[in-house]
Image (cartoon, rainbow, N blue to C red; front, top):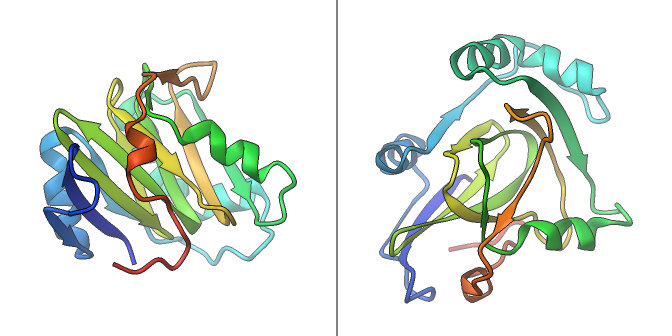
Length: 185
């Protein structure tokens, strides 16, 4: 299930709150400018579907988001546990960074953990199939796909360079829990 846990940045072992209620997650993220919503496919998406088939299943929501935000590029990324580059791919996103554009991802399948550092508060969002998250530009965060990554996501970009991370050089991300698929709590 999708989940939001909120921590003080000085205490990564004790969440201040935790919820799996989707409406509550969206409500608690809204004050920091984070978009959180759920999408339903207009048609079934089969394992192994092509990027065009994936995007066709979510065309109405994709078009709405592009019109609202002026995204110039939309693509599909798929990572499987047997990917030979999975460790390097995971490591790329594990340190605190920010972007000069919103980071918007929709989870078609699988899951991952977005962790946002806003002021002295850390918001840990476990995104699952059907979740869309929009992290505002300049929001410091990190992402963990776990040691056995398995997800398909639709990505939205306004900049032609695609994903460009600006790393903060802090070690805060190493202090907080990592993502393990099926983790409890």
